[in-house]
Amino acid sequence: MTILLVIAILVLLIVAHELGHFIAAKIFKVRVEEFGVGYPPRAFLFGKVGDTEYTFNWLPFGGFVRLFGDEGEGQHGQGSFVDAKRGVQAAVLVAGVIANIIAAYFLFAGAFALGIPRVVDDGSSAAVHLVIADVIEGSPANAAGLTPGDEIVSVSDESGSAPQELSPRAVIDFVRERGGEPLLVTYARAGATSSATLRPAHAVIANEAGRPAIGLALVLVSNEPLPPAKALKESLSRTRDGTIIVAKGLWTIIRDALSGSPNLSEVVGPVGLVSVVSDAATHGVGNLLALAGFISINLAIINLIPIPALDGGRLVLLGLETVMRRSAPRLVAQAINALGVFLIVFLMIAVTYQDIARLLS
Image (cartoon, rainbow, N blue to C red; front, side):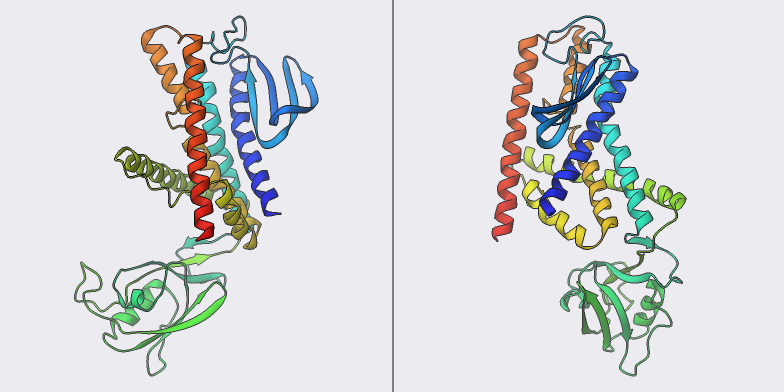
């Protein structure tokens, strides 16, 4: 079932990407010869509308759009992609990336409408929990084994006193007044409840050395479903933040690779994705939709990498053609695309190897 979910998510997001190319091509009068779900060989033809065939194909791992006069095919005439203005070609290429961002936005909105964890300021609702956002290295909390994501159930001192409410400010003030005293912190992790005794210490926080602290950054988190209008609003910031996080992470990987020390330990491929999707599915449909939104952003950013065969590589080639004021020779375009496919296959093999090694360890 998890494997089917992975395939369904990837097909949905890749088809959404190709739908972006399709819509842009139709808007700019570029002829679309085929819109396919899955990859050839063809299983059957849904039908034909105008010049476009709508097909279902046997390999269920995505979808594609076949444009008349696509790069390297040497087809010219009315509706040819290569004969279109370069601005039109760029718009058609970028449309796939935009479609993935839009898909992520609506997936996040659906997730918020169903209810997923989100940081809130108000702790008055019964659905709000106090959660550890970060743990300072070398702090009492770190030594006791507390980790980000743990939910704080209670905090009390030896006399049984506790904060008036479980909020970040109330807990901070409670800890600050009890430097060196043992505090009992009860927390929940993966459905199990544990306790740890911590003593607030000075110099835990670098710029507040005189303030007793245990080394926790706390936030209020709510799983409460949002009304549709609020879900759509909340999704804007989640989509923006997700795009920034993915872009920074990808840049770090590329930078490390260029410096000769590539690190793929945090990269998840198709095999590792099965485990990630399985974990999200156990926490409800909302979390599954949020994961799909995050994957959609990944697809959008990855497609902007200037590797031949990806949209980013084709945009670079289009820019070079604009500077040279002529199209690249057909054989050169085909060779560049073949190189891009080779690089993508090599990367997929490396990531899959890393997934399997992670599972075996």
